[in-house]
Length: 505
Image 1 (cartoon, rainbow, N blue to C red):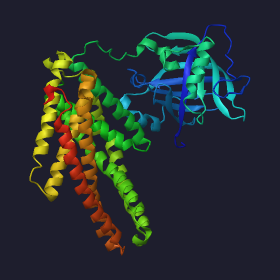
Image 2: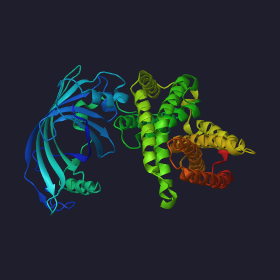
Image 3: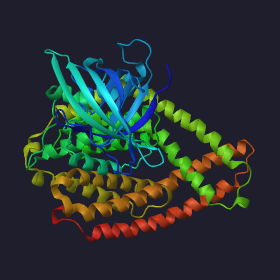
Image 4: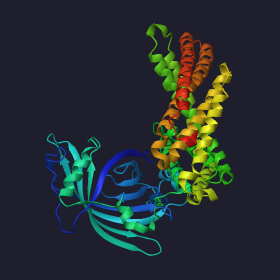
């Protein structure tokens, strides 16, 4: 089977009164012509788990026959108006989801079987909207639908809707212009994110509604659910080898672990300790691949600042060979983890925590009072870590500053979690914590960078490379580290000076 292709969809759906005509959009958002309709008959079967795990994650998986893009379509949410669509051509068993797509949604299905849940037949009338040069701006479709959903009781439905989809080359901002024009013509925005969701309706459990006065448990669980969603979305990106996806997955993993540890008095830390340990394991599997990405980008940027007469030999080709091998090894390690049973069990445990959380008695208390203590502890650990750097030098100081960075990151994550409760009261303190964290992040880059340069120098010498330039970069990183320590000292004083509520001191 051919490799999956990917397209980005930007569209909105509208409901229209029965018997009404299709709006004319000439003169809107640069449209000069609106073509006569082209009819297509589309026949689609939709797949999900019996508990609608994909639908709950905002994902649609279908096999569609008819139209110019017949095939298997996996639609992943990006934003309210934007989706990434992964496509595979028709072929193989028409009643079995291709393995490539099953693996892409493993973080959502958690190993549950994908089965047919609905069938939709669409009689589509598509109007191409073009500019004065004949280039497609968007497509307006008038869809007449007949749907059937399975389950304990069958559900039948018929309806009509308009869909306005921008051409990939059209600026996303034009969607608002079309929206206003369609509203003036009598169309109303559909309350449903997809045709499938309209058909299956209340069979998909609704997300918990936020309370006007949230408890501590409400706030912490909302944060955990957000990070869990980020992890699953990044999982798909990693499997597709999308840029920056390993980084996003590692950040989500860290935030989840940090939240479980920081707010262990809200979500029982003893019950979640095994999960926190597994998240630490996952972070270790992701780290080498991400470190290679950061190391290579940083080193190439540094080389770009070196005068050409001081770059001896084919150093860039040498770096390409070295980093390509390390990147391949890092990705192999990541994929081995993501396809293994241990990771699947981690996801299942995480799913259980967010769906059936082991809340403590303190979780039921008002958020404003119950969340102060965990945040104070995070701030106190940060201050203790900074105090432990006193009198240290060289490698011991570098290690201690790295600990300060980790504690600053945890304090910042904690502030992000409680932001819905304390809002502006923590804004300045969080900003100062972030400045400390970023400074020490840059400092750690120089530490790791010098280790990488040392390794490359030894390996390059063995291959007969002239490694003089690496020595220059090493010395530059050492000097940069010293300057960053001075910057850290200034930013720490600013953090300690104030800009926080009295209870956080």
